[in-house]
Image (tube, rainbow, N blue to C red; front, side):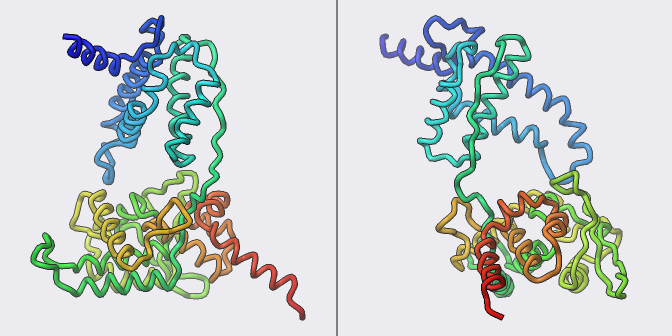
Length: 364
């Protein structure tokens, strides 16, 4: 009987954590439940409107974020703050919680996300006049190397060649695939991302033929202008100018694979309507091939070289091989100079320092 009673008490306490002499209505957990009910109502209210014209996500970003924040709350926040009187939570509690997360060896960005969720719940309580002020939250600085580690041109060419080679091989009898022909299309995606700068997600996989326009430059050179239906940074939605390599990929490979009949055909894996499934399968193959070539893992960084790292390669390549300014490069890649130098082009700083040394100190 004692054992059963203890189990029931622990089960109840995990669901309704309360410290001594804390009224249930004033507990952090009770307020958190009200916060998540309110957020769920907001997500459900806007869900149908946001999905009405959506062709990439199977659920809204609001639903995705809500699921993530609920998981974060259950994992660490509920256990630490749940039973506390929300009116008595102060800056010391926040700092102790931060130390606890740091002891788990989380990345600074993850710790920042946890603190943001705690702050959101307390802000909700403040709006309801349950608390009169918010405690001070520490500022989390990103000290680790969180930049995207670029692929060199040689590595990119090696990955492309390996993808094309594998596309001509036959799967083993144990494989669920009939062929590896789609690897050839993934090789085109690798080069397309590098030369166009599109992010390998919604930006890339909802592109259709109708978004491409053949333009003649002042020098009578023909190039394609891409008018993307989606870009991550909404304040910088510009038509994207392209080079002769994109022109060759589009005309000689994409249009032959998926002819432009109505303009509504997707340019990559046009026969698969689930565009997130396309992204996941492309990522899986790229990761598999880059790992087999020992290019994926990076020893001196928390971040491995994913398909996203080709954007970093493209930015660096444009900086080295063209006359584009940093503003031109970041506008072309739908980014900002600060983000480019911190996340994408960080590893080129050493090379530029060597070049600057040669310019300054080399004898004439």
